[in-house]
Length: 258
Ligand SMILES: NC(=O)c1ccc[n+]([C@@H]2O[C@H](COP(=O)([O-])OP(=O)(O)OC[C@H]3O[C@@H](n4cnc5c(N)ncnc54)[C@H](OP(=O)(O)O)[C@@H]3O)[C@@H](O)[C@H]2O)c1
Image (cartoon, rainbow, N blue to C red; front, side, top):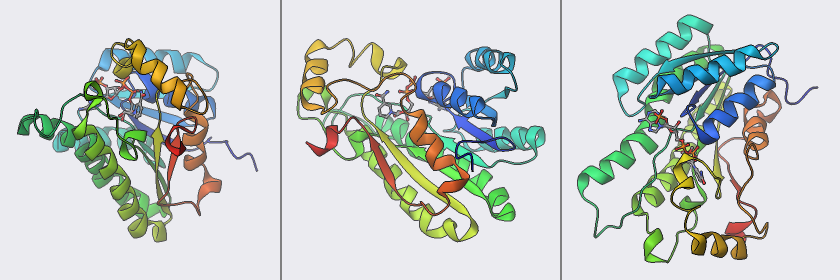
């Protein structure tokens, strides 16, 4: 069995316009999947589609989608189903991160984090799971964060809405796994440690104190490298992982165990 052979499989990746989502899209396509790329910035998706389709056997297409908007997400899923006629794999990767505490944030801030990080997953799942149930096959992978498990003490790093929503991703993952694994649909979560992306390049990666602290604490003594999240994602997405469900995997160089 070629464990990482995704030919004939259709993978939807949210937040594919940059960072970890774009890398995952490349990873799925390199291993034979037909990929559908969702995010709001269509021009960025289009250039990734071009890059993937230029490679031998690469098949990608893009749909502009704001996952925080239920109707918009439903329409995007319809476009994907019209194009590929099925969805086997859903990577819920779209997310936002920003600083703030229970004292400093207002309701609009909390709503922004909940709308993307939690409702974004709920919206894609609501419209993709019915087809997976019919076909008795599905692999759902939700991107949470190491910040679902551990939080930062320095005031400059307080991100309570991020901690809360990413912990919620793990709870939602378990609930969905308990319900849908019997229909052949597994749901798992991945908790990345620090990776350099648009989300972190001008914030955490610019704060040399933070980087020093991270590297000193992290058993791997470094942030995650580009593409280093792909193998864990592909594992959960693989056909062979059908008996793995409701789990969360920390991909953090060991940060959370020290
Ligand atoms: N980088 C890290 O160190 C790290 C660590 C732990 C967890 N994570 C998680 O990893 C995931 C990917 O983040 P990243 O680091 O790759 O950051 P990124 O480069 O900023 O990517 C975030 C992606 O989410 C998309 N997005 C944001 N709001 C959206 C919305 N309303 N609808 C659709 N797409 C939306 C963005 O696309 P558009 O702006 O084009 O919509 C972008 O493609 C996030 O869930 C993040 O929380 C990252």
